Amino acid sequence: MFSFPNPVNEVASRVVASGVVVVAALALALQLPWVSAILAYGFLARVATGPRLSPLGQLATRLVAPRLSSSPRLVPGPPKRFAQGIGAVLTVAATAAWFGFHSAPVAYALLAVLLAAAFLEAALAFCLGCWLFSRLMALGVIPASVCASCMDISRRQRPVDA
Image (cartoon, rainbow, N blue to C red; front, side, top):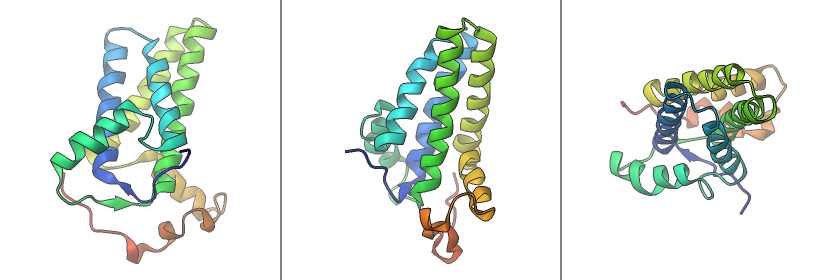
């Protein structure tokens, strides 16, 4: 139950990111910092189980992504899990800022950072967390054994136009 898929369908990842963009943008536009708690649940669920316990993950993998692309674009799972972990940290911190410290400005700032990163993934297929993961691997902070397929560029598929 507590496992993350490897590989991951990039199309589904971008759909999830699109959902995060919409929810975070609404939270910011409507000044609803408590929505960070809903986002936090989604990120924590996806880090722990992939899309299995995430309503947004289920929507993306079962309904939306299959209708957008007949052939999934498979990418390594560990960088995507790392990126979900960053989203979890940001949203848990935003939730703590709002509920624990009653600081809407801090919650909004964290949600804005999340929104920017999710937008990059959704619109441009640039996963900021994945990029950071690769930099940390290059520096030796993350061992190559964590993601052998990340090190083998010959196994990467050609990007699909969005």
